[in-house]
Image 1 (cartoon, rainbow, N blue to C red):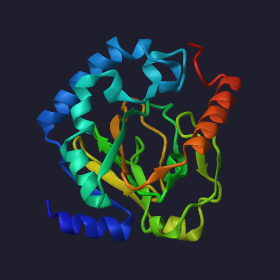
Image 2: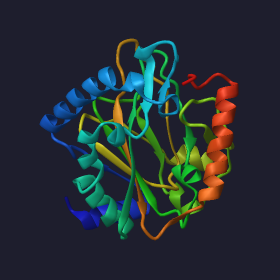
Image 3: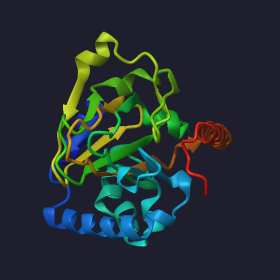
Amino acid sequence: MDIELIKKRFEEDGYVFLPGFMSQEEITDVNQKLEVFIADVVPGLPANDVFYEDKNAPETLKQIMHVSEYEPSFAPMLHNSKFSEIAGQLLEDQIVPRILEYFNKPPKIGKPTPPHQDGYYFMLKPAKAVTMWMALENVDEANGCVRYVRGSHKKGMRRHGRTQTLGFSQGITDYGLPEDLENEIAFPAKPGDLLIHDSLTIHRADGNQTSDRTRRALGFIYFGESAREDVEAKAAYQAQLQKEMREKGELVAE
């Protein structure tokens, strides 16, 4: 990899696409571990760390938080890996590995991911963080590939409001302006392809319109060590969010 070219593209666009970041052999191993983890461990995890499109149907699993904490064999991917190395190079800072997540959009019912900026959830000053998204299978426009708005990271934080999408509670309220649509780019991906974006880059994804294909991926989040989290504001936000989700029946009772 030409890291200087990668950094240049990241700084200009707010994202970078790295095809074949993991080999097919590595992806096969990851998928096998995930299958065992989902079958044996996920059913016993806390309800606020596992989301389903239909909470009564395990096959509609859409998101798992803190994968590397619940399954230690995934921890090396988040810590001291080629993922953490490139995060540090892009942030030009010591990095703080935050979370490894699993994402899916089940066939037919996998909902759209609303347009948002991750920095709205992170609540960092400065907003120095990167998110990575790695495909575990073929992803295209039919089953909901990631879409970025080029250069949006340079224009600050947009206004967000409550959505009805479980796992993505906040979305940009005025998305769809001409400059959004003109600069939106879709990124189909193959297993092992990696997308990395700035915490202020606007992104979204359509729902899964296929009848027989999933849309599985892993997500990684890294903060720059120099960034400071507004702990009180974030705790208040999370408490209010979970209260709303319980009231609407979006969380399975533990």
